[in-house]
Length: 93
Image (tube, rainbow, N blue to C red; front, top):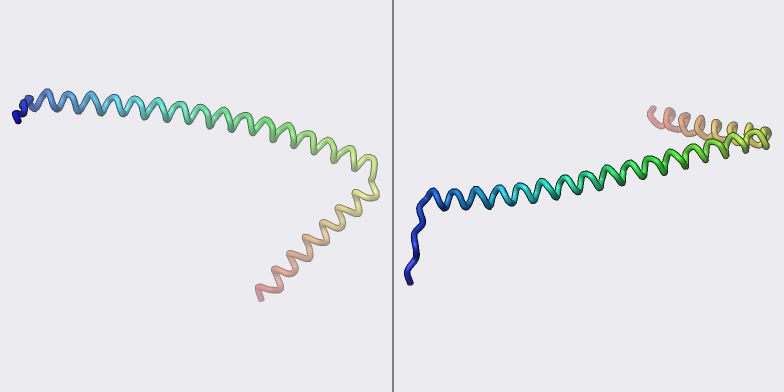
């Protein structure tokens, strides 16, 4: 079995070319993945914004239609938050 010896510069050039090919493929894959992630993020952000605005508008309408219930709900939530804070403060001692 005979092996053909190649000059070191040729081997080095081949390694450099292969390395550059792999680097380019990796860069392309990264760019595509980044672009997809940005697109998905922007889409999700728009959906969340739309839903938040809808929820806000629905809450405003509910408060206008049911002011007594809204005050009761707000008072209940305030009492609950106050109780949780009081519990946290008393447990620290």
